[in-house]
Image (cartoon, rainbow over all chains, first blue to last red):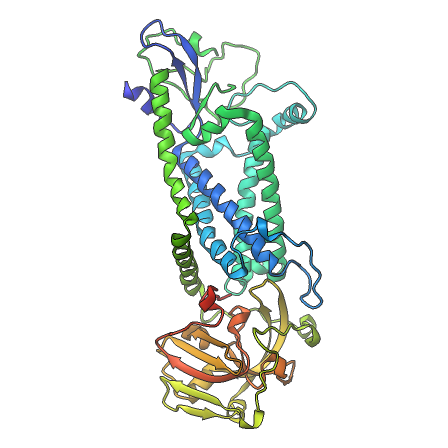
Length: 242
Length: 278
């Protein structure tokens, strides 16, 4: 009996089971469930979410020390971010949080990407040319009350686009961060971004782009309801749409 | 495509072809596709599914270990460890032969726009006539060194970026003697780990030996081709383009070569990075 589902859990692609009320021949259907998120993906998702939260909070506290991208003399502040929405209390404290959680962020990202590539599970999220035809119908559905296109897999083309973009932003956040942290040892990387001064701006811009993704992501999580949310905890999504 | 339809065989039949994501989108003309994506949907009773879900939920629990960062006493310890790890990685990344970018004169920040940062006073009132650099520690020739002795060493000038931990940066022109030349002059044991300095305003700092020996690390007595002004650290300051700004101490009065750091630096001892190499 155990093997019944153990086999499917180990399968990297989506696995669907039928949930039944009683065992035996006359089992009554109680719905279906799909195994969408392997354990490693769930670990990385939550470790990444926590570290992103800390990095944004501490990053904004670091930004408070010089809230500008212009000259120091004279200094024109771009944005006075409230201390209450920052982490670390002061510049030194925020740097401690930032320089600690950047490793957790990096590790969760590397493990996630490595796992997805190694297992082939990346097909679940990677936006490719095959997804392009499905973009417009989804846009019509989301923004212009169009009928919902039929789904055959865990993520629709727009979701894939969003997740692929977020992964790209994750990579950019690391690269711009490295250029700020090590503008001398990684001077070539900093040079690509226009030097330390510009790399600092790109790092800031990438953060807001990432926050825009998170904002949309959280709205969609709320709209899609409990079963969808639970799937990122247990891996199993009850009553999938496919 | 109805899973139940496909499931005409025995209940024991559990083989399932998972939804294949790389399969080409098939035309929607026929329900009876020649390559059904789902051969069978295995059954799982409600209780087993609940058990399975709980078990999978528990497996995610290790991520909650990050919650220890919320415990105040542990938090301080862990953040110190995290910072220490970053410093360790920074030291690994440091390359002796790699020079910090240098800039054309046209890129220089105007002297008036070069910020004056200090933790106490702009001018600690050094009396230049009486000034000397007091050298001690693992050196063959300890004692007092006058500015003329340092200026007698081969001078170097460099346009390098000065990066403050706060986030601003300027490109300045610095002139002085290489710290490595000075260390040779005083017969320093360069196998020692650290250089420490003390300042007229009671600021103090330290450098790892690899950075101290770097060719761009200067005992700086000139900025913008003129003698250092008092606000910028006259008569002698450090200029270390491979380090963050707070490492570049001003108004130097003492220099020591040592293997033991009782204190790292004024800001470091309050929680800033000890290494902070750029």
